[in-house]
Image (cartoon, rainbow, N blue to C red; front, side):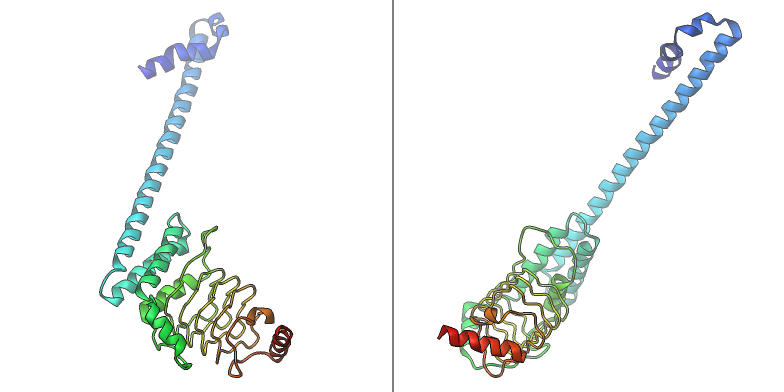
Length: 274
């Protein structure tokens, strides 16, 4: 029916009234030319529609594969085998690296994994805060899966906007996070003895109440980070980007390694407060 309409009334309509002035072969050739043009246009339109449909089908198929892969990766995080949990984390990292629509869900899942697997109880936190300083080192408490998860969070992938990642009340003593990006992350009440943040980005991080005894913070960017009641005894802040006023509410003693001008200014501020 469509072909009849296309080659009949439609062709006559497009050809116009002048075709009626032609006769015989001239009329036939003119109509035939119009019909050929219409057939070519219809074929092109059909091909474009088919291509669009194929592209949409491919996009939906790819999306379904991504969701399925992400779902299977998340299910691995509850495995009793650490190797399977790490495999799930690395798959989730791929999702972040590809910057697809699952990126926000991926980063939130990794944060939830860290909070669940490395949670600090109130009793543990109070016990650590009341105990003498212990100089933690790489691997003292950290497990390979938590180390992997922290490195994924600390990698410089684009982060979802308008919300802060939350790793509060977690334990990653001895983690190696040099050069990582934890800018703007909530790290309230964390246990981070001996953790290496050398050259890391901790701008705007919320570190209040955390234990960072013996932490490596050399060349770390701490601008506008909150450090209220943070235990920095024995921590190394050589060349750290930090304002002395930020250190006023922190716990600092002679074992804290500070640049001389920072220590001098901090002493002046404390004397002014006294």
